[in-house]
Length: 347
Image (cartoon, rainbow, N blue to C red):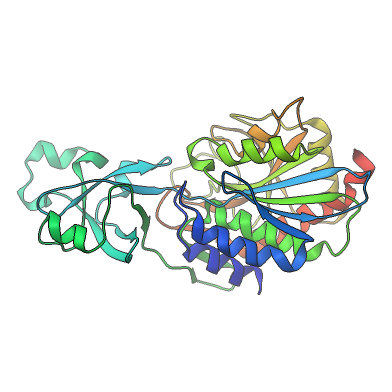
């Protein structure tokens, strides 16, 4: 499969944080042909291991499999589903979105509804409806019918968006945060035919709710170097100042200097920049982003792990659909592979 085909399969799968089963199955199958071993730890992280020399450095790549979404919270007597948010979601993006409720009996399509604007009072129309004022309509006549359809409290709910190419280079889809990181990791392992280092390619769980999977996986592996593969805000859209989000689409992957949870280790920063420049891979540097990645938790493992982040610029992250450049993702693969090949000379 091409990188675009890999991303399409991963993007269309459901993997709301804590319910990553579908993505986990895909990741195991995708990693298996290009690693020596694939295993799953107790929390649900997928770990693909490509073995190097016995005395060589251990490298941990981390890309989170989970996505933002919803859980069913209650079922009203009229058959409507109230929900809670899983991960950081702006309430303004929820209204009228198509969703899929993932039940034991199979997927149910629905729509997020509210009181119609035609009958709202003036003051109601002026304010943002919060998520607890909204509901999911699955067409059930009452609570009993909703339960017969298979709905249970705690069922995960994903946005109903399908992957699409809108040009040779630009794609849109669901959960690019962080299925593109997963796709980059899979493609990187394809490129690493042989490596001096032992590489652990880890699809982590529950990143969107506190970087949890990376915390436990890194403790078990205790790598010498950690690299998170994630997304970052592409700020080249109307209304965004360059000082707020300087990274742009089609200008190459971003290398994090510092974010809310990580100051990249100087050796790792030098490694990534040198790998990019020596291989003529376009890249961007980023500092000051309020969010963080799995690298923040990897870096604090046991006595500490020098860590960094390679990110794919992506528009509209943490919303139902995002947009990115496949060229940026391809260059992220090249940069990750080049950095791994250089690690024996740096560590």
